[in-house]
Image 1: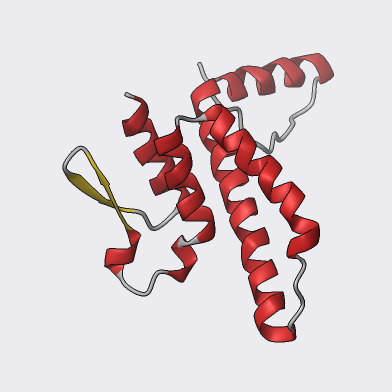
Image 2 (image 1 turned 180 degrees about the vertical axis):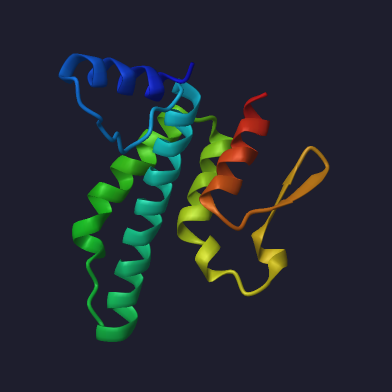
Length: 130
């Protein structure tokens, strides 16, 4: 039986009343994937907002953001091999600047992969790590 259903049955029996459970119970692999995608998307959004502030209003926050960016980049290099870290950082910093589909292609083992989303990036990294 599914963990969510077991959990629901337990509390219905305990409180003797119907209950509704919202949320999700993730496997360890699903949690890693979700956390990676959330991290990458949030980091990319922060870079895009900073870029937008610079372009629209001439506000350059980089002197404040630089320490945070270097820390996050350091964590990425600490966690992943250099090749994988470079692809992650490419996605975060440069992917949004792509002018064509060709600019979104990553070559790996004589294959080409088009990276559109953070989930695509995660799937490619899983291939790198096999």
